[in-house]
Length: 188
Image (cartoon, rainbow, N blue to C red; front, side, top):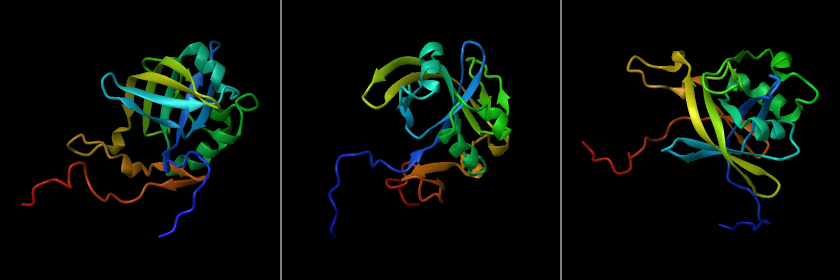
């Protein structure tokens, strides 16, 4: 099987796509779509997001050191795209999209009420990397929508139809093909 060789680039796809909400010192909210987000550490629980310094939300993040990661779903796909192409300098994204800002418990940034999972974060470190700067953050609180819990209190994000980003497109996550450890589990 032949493969083409391309110039170095980011080909780690698909990526989670999230809406990150922030609030400036005056209490003005904004939402930015980020596909460069990820888990960094379990203990303490940490995440990272990366964005360009010229983005409207960048100085807000630098100044406040707080944000909320809001997981995206099929129902939120239009909002995800809109928040990625429109600037908070020009438009109130919560108002334009009819999204509900909810008060977070640990940070001043709002949660997006329509998101099934909201992750409150506090920035620990900003690492300039080139075109993007990475914000390392500790998770201060996690909110999960009750309607996706089963009778045993197991959370089922798949029922919310989470989306991912790949090569300019948004895709609904597919079917489960295994579980952690199934490859080494003893056959009964």
